[in-house]
Image (cartoon, rainbow, N blue to C red; front, side, top):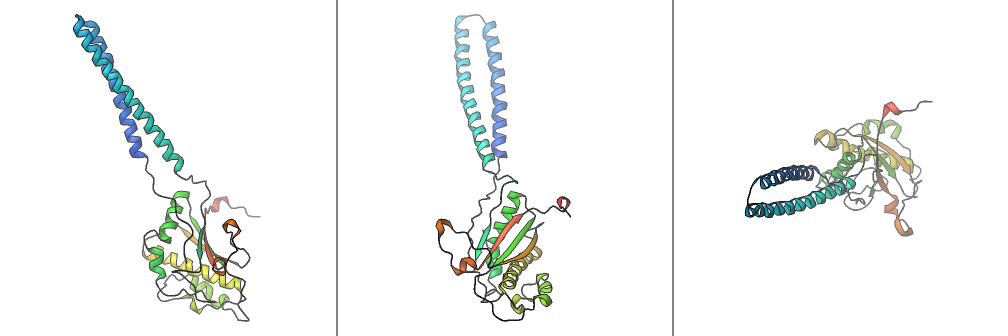
Length: 260
């Protein structure tokens, strides 16, 4: 599966620029004090030559002060630009769209992933783990929803075992020893849920064993074939667009729950 979303959550640090701004402001104040001091000295001294020399010095300091003021204004503009480029925690997070193709691919009609390279694929530099972590940090997220989508191809007349085995497998993050291959889908709704659960298990594996994705909760859902992918320019969707996993970010606040 290939990611369609490129995280735009590069860490931004405005404190260096802010420190420079404060340093320049302090320097400007000192220059004002020095200028005032020199003016008083110039007034108290006798002799036209000395007054002329001090006048030249004052003019030089005033020009330097003007230059520093311009630097100060430029720094303030840069700080404002950096602030505006940082997403607010109330902004809408992106949706990560993983198609059933490429390096990460499900076996036909199954939630089993082809090969164990999925663990390295998720955790490589700038991979899915980093993408989820960056978005969670930028938008103040604590809940990651994993939604499985399928195409229109019927699963067939098969007896599902999800009622019996799904909960045990979903709660077991031991990817190397317990796989989703033993799950049998009786419908596309089953298949979408099974695949979402398998992605959730991989994320929990990294959370438990690699110290990643701390503080995040994961939930798996199925949309089956009910939600077609939205593609730009009205491009007809292909089967590997329909067979996809969507990762959505939200905030869970139990204290703000309405019970009726």
